[in-house]
Image 1: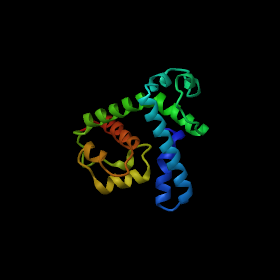
Image 2 (image 1 turned 90 degrees about the vertical axis):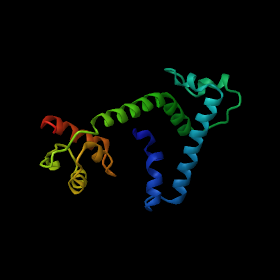
Image 3 (image 1 turned 45 degrees about the vertical axis):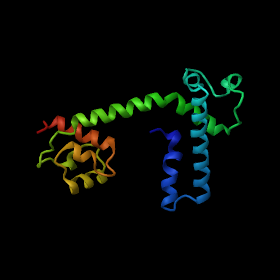
Image 4 (image 1 turned 135 degrees about the horizontal axis):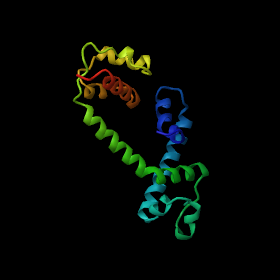
Length: 163
């Protein structure tokens, strides 16, 4: 997660709960569609690997890409970033999933107090105490529990000797 794409990730939620106007949400959805459309077009034109190279820009591909349509600067910037970091993001997600599965079987002792986990938000403590998961795998599936919160729980379990 990066702050550059927070608008595309969070604005639909803001619109759903009434914090964002329908017009602003539609504008964000339009730009997101432009970004995905351009990424798909570049992939089909076999130009995406060229954009992933260090120092490459969307504008620099113009001589190789005669059929392109002009795009707003914020869309171009996001296309460049998405293209450049897609592999890293895919790899990080795969590693996180694998790492999570490795720890899923870890038992959480009944006596374990989530309130003693340093850095854990009070919301996460409340969710964990209310649910009282038996294993890390069960904790991982608690809605609203962030990967960061789960990492803190794992560190605390390691320090206190997991059961």
